[in-house]
Length: 269
Image (cartoon, rainbow, N blue to C red):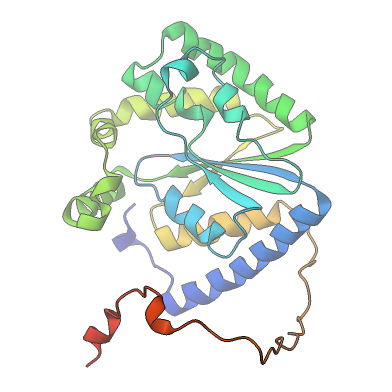
């Protein structure tokens, strides 16, 4: 169902709700840091489903030293020869960290399977070993959360067209994205098989209806927060100390420094 057939949250209301959620994310961040938690959140789904937009809103107000995003590219020849999960393991969190995977090891169950980038044996082994791998992560103390962003064919088409017509967004359309449009049914079947093997009780798949971006962001962030029994450990108001005074300090001449040109002033009317 496309956006035009559903009621959409108003802009001002959306901004207010989002801001409040981001305040809660800051509280969650402090909780994760002080309690030494290890959190992994996986974002998967159709191309143009809005995963990046949600990740951007989650991280917008957070400390990148605590909450970081991992978006791996095509594996190198060396990485292809390694244990499949090896390059992802290198990015797992230490105590007090949150890692958001913008696509993850589930590439094998999706694009690699559909596009023929892995063998049938490698695909079958992934389906067999992935649940065990995730259970091992959970036993090690990692909190694993998995989101699948679901978007309709019609809405994906609208977003692809918007990217084609917007110069700043064309980079988001890779040849692989375009090819995926011709294999919509194959991707659907691959997703169904993936769910049947990896939707485990220790780490279930949470499906996000992503046809309306603003709704998807609010729904996903709200759900993420609900999975933690966190407390507000953010520091209280800080008293700013007086700045040091030193009458003997002499600032170097301004003309001895190289300044960025004042281009913005040209646009003042």
